[in-house]
Amino acid sequence: MDRLPLIHHRLLIDGERLPAAEGRTHETFNPATEELLAQFALADASDVDLAVRAARRALEAGPWSRATGAERARVLNRLADLLEREREDLVLLESLDAGKPLAATRRQDLPAAIECLRYYAGWADKLAGEVVPARPGALTYVRREPVGVVAAIVPWNFPLMNAVWKIAPALACGCTVVLKPAELTPLSALRLGELALEAGLPAGVLNVIPGLGTEAGQALVEHPGVDKIAFTGSPAVGKRIMATAAARCAKVSLELGGKSASIVLADADFEAAVRASASGIFFNAGQVCSAGSRLFVHRRIHDSFIDALSRRAGRLRMGDTRHAATTLGPLISRAQQQRVLAYVEAGTAEGAQCIQPPGEVPTQGFFVPPTIFAGARNDMRIAREEIFGPVATVIPFDDAEEAVAMANDSAYSLAAGLWTRDVCVAHALAHRLRAGTVWVNTFGPTSSQLPWGGLGGDSGVGRDLGRSALDAYTEPRVVWLQLSP
Ligand code: NAD
Image (cartoon, rainbow, N blue to C red; front, side, top):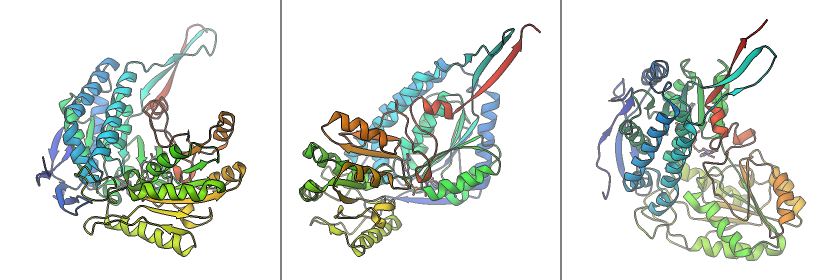
C-alpha cells in the first residue's frame, strides 16, 4: 500500500460502525507531506453518551466482566497475534498519520504495543484477592474487582502504543473501555477497535470514538457513567480533567508532560552518552513525554559534547517518512511547528547559543531542524518549559551536587538520565533524582513490566504499565463473614 485510500472511517460503538450522530466528519493529514489521509466520523457529546452506555451495558451484562481470566488472556493474546499479522499495515498507518519514520515505527511503536498486550494477557488469570485474617471468628477477605467503565483519552505522539498501555491492563482486569484518540491521529485506534472485535472481544467492551478534546473529550470526562478516567496528554488539559472529575469524585490517572534531565558526569562513556542523548531528544522529533530535553554536561566536556552532538544532529535527514533515508520526521501539525519555532527564537533571545546543523529543511510538511542550545541556564524558558520538539538545551555544571539540584528544580518529574562509570555514584545520585524513572548509562527504554509515570505536578499522578496498572483498573472490595459471635 503506497498511500491510504481516502475512505470514511466510522465510530466504533457497541460493536457497530456508526456515523457520528450529528453526521459530522473531520480530516486527518500526513504531517510530512500535508496530504489528506482520511475523513473520519467526529464524535460529540451524544456519541459519547451512546459509547458510555454501551460500555456500561457490556460491563453489567457480561460476558467480559464475568469471563474467566484465561478467557480474557486468550482474547488479548489473539489481539496481539492480529497486530503481528497486520504489523506492516499498522506501521504504515501510524507512520503516515503521526509523521513517524517507518523504520522507527517498526522498531518502537508496534513491538511495544504487542508486548504490552501479551504482558497483560499474562496477568489476566493471575489477578487474585487475598484472605486477611482481621479478627478471630471471622473470615475476612479482599476481592479484586474491575474498576468499571474506563475512559481512555490519549495524545498523538504514540497513538497506538499509548492506547494499548491503557486498554491492555483495563481489559485484563475485566473493565470496559471508551477510547478517545487524539483528533490528529485517529486511524490506528480505529483499526485497533476492528481487530479487537476480530480477536473475539464482545461488542461494547471497547468503543472507539475520535472527537475533539473540548467536545468529545470533555463530555467523556463529565459523563456520570464513567468510573475511571485514564488520561495521557498535556499538563494543562490533565489539570482541567482532574478538576472536572473532582466534582463527582471520579478516579483519575494522569500521564502528563516531562522536561527530563540527563546528567553527563566527566567520567561518562562519552560516545555512548552522546549517542543516547541524540536519540533521547531527536527520536520522534522530540515529541516524547520523557524526551531528554535538558542535558546537564560537566563543564570539562561541555564543548566537545556539543561538537559531537551537533555532528550527530547533522546526520539526521528530514523528508517523507516513507523513505528509508528519513530519520527525522515532522512535528504533528502547523500549530506545533510554530510553537516549537517560537521556543527556538526565545532561546536565542535569552542568550543561549543556538546550533542548527546545515541541511535541507523540506518546505512541505511541518518540519523543524534539529536544534541544540549550548551554554544555557536552568532558569531559561527553554530549560523550564516542555517544548515537545527536536530542541536540546545543554547546561554546563561544575559538580554533581549542583547538577542534581538543577535537575530536580523543575515542575516535571517523569524521567531522568545519569551517565557515569562509577557504580556507587550512580546509585547514590539515581536515588536523589526526582523522577518516576531514572536511566543510568542509557536513555529512554521502557518496558511493560515496569511502572511508568511522574511524581505529581506537571508530570501527573498514577502509573501506566507494570503491576501498578493492575491497581489502577481494579477495586479492592472487602467481605467480612462473621463465623462465630
Ligand atoms: P493534549 O492534552 O492537548 O491532548 C491529549 C488528549 O486529550 C487528546 O485526545 C485531546 O483530544 C484530549 N483533550 C484535549 N482537551 C480535552 C479536554 N478539555 N477534555 C478531555 N480531553 C481533552 O496533549 P497533546 O498535545 O495531544 O500531547 C502532548 C502532551 O502529552 C505532552 O505534554 C506530553 O508530554 C504528554 N504525553 C505524556 C506521556 C506520558 O506517558 N506521561 C506520553 C505521551 C504524551
